[in-house]
Amino acid sequence: MDLVRILCAVFLPPLGVFLQVGFGADFWINVVLTLFGYFPGIIHAVWIIAKK
Image 1 (cartoon, rainbow, N blue to C red):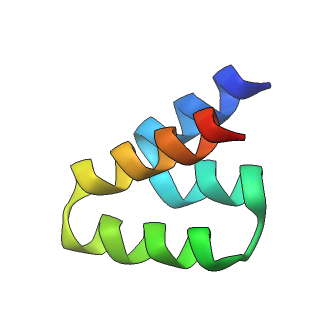
Image 2: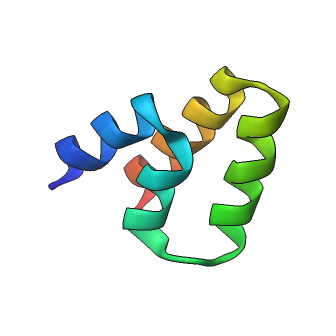
Image 3: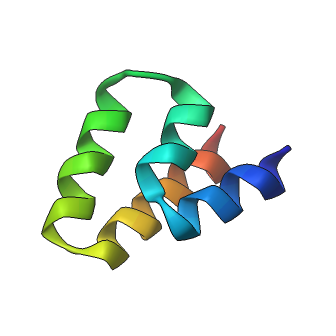
């Protein structure tokens, strides 16, 4: 299942974080990071998925 989340995180970072933690603070942080730049959103999403 983590592979699916990581693939989602690469293509749409907030989706990967949502699948891992739902609508929490990490999700909204990832949305902001993705809006500021695509790569910070990917890095944060993969970190959140790998951490849990």
